Image (cartoon, rainbow, N blue to C red; front, top):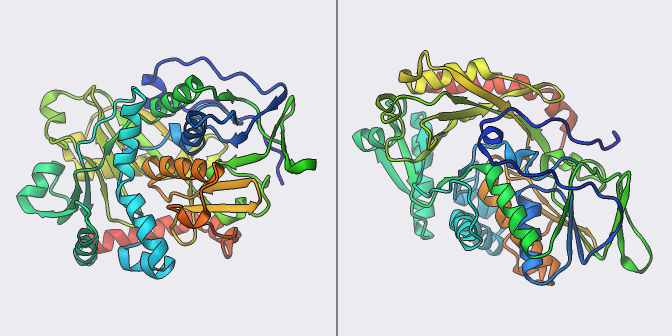
Length: 434
């Protein structure tokens, strides 16, 4: 196991450039006692901290970086109310009827849950619920969308299939055949959302420490857990691990139960009204159905943010931006020649079954992660669910099933093969769209 290290520098992202300055969290020093200790100051850990602190629990959050340093402050900021990859029938087979109903309901309501939480706590994060458009790239994907939309609508989901002029009026591009629109989707400035969660949690008494990687997690006498960093210790009867793709081996097997993937993004210079008004003119966010998806949005200052999968070259150095720019110009030809002012990347966690995972490997120890690219909404719901469990809710009542930690089969080979696999999937996507 590699020794936990203090997180690296902040990425030069649009989110970092436009978020207000927030003083760094203090380092963990000396001894702290709490009812609940949380490792990870991203959406999951911070939403859990907020819910617990509101309920009267004494909460300590510890992070190797700081609030929103990982995926929570780097992602595309899309609030998408739908599970990734798996359609309703696949989910039902994976989960069984009871767990399927609860998870499906939580997923479909996840965007509303987040926007309601933002409004309730007065979080300033440029939140807008203008809808989400998932555009369809091929005839095969169109048929799958027809089936899935019908199944989701039967459960009460507000999904609508759009084609032709109706699609083009929403998307501002003719690069796709059809699309599925959800009025419940939207967007946030993700780093500002993380900062807002942290501020709200602090108002209710939570303590948050940064630049303090946890080097040891063990259970002491009396059932109390001890989290140790280089300079401090937290003692608490309940621990929540919310480190997602940045997980280590603090919890045995946790790191090997997920696959880290590396999305990258670019943000344009502010565009002229004549250009920006042609792109997503009704304010939707957009993603597509390709295996190597794109996702995009327009910003209040007339920028376009566009993302897809990239790769990590070395720590904190990402690649894949040239392909990303070309793809943005393919979808939106009016972007040719614009200057892309920001480029950044980060890591998300994929799971083998494409489902979020909730684990309770020992009494008083919880872990939640694995949002497979839909983390803005689902990670917040996971934080709430972890708080419910920490407060004593029965496992069988939770939105996410509590499952054993299982390693990803052939994980090492899959990690090594991630780059070639992305290239192969891009080729398959290209052939399907010809």
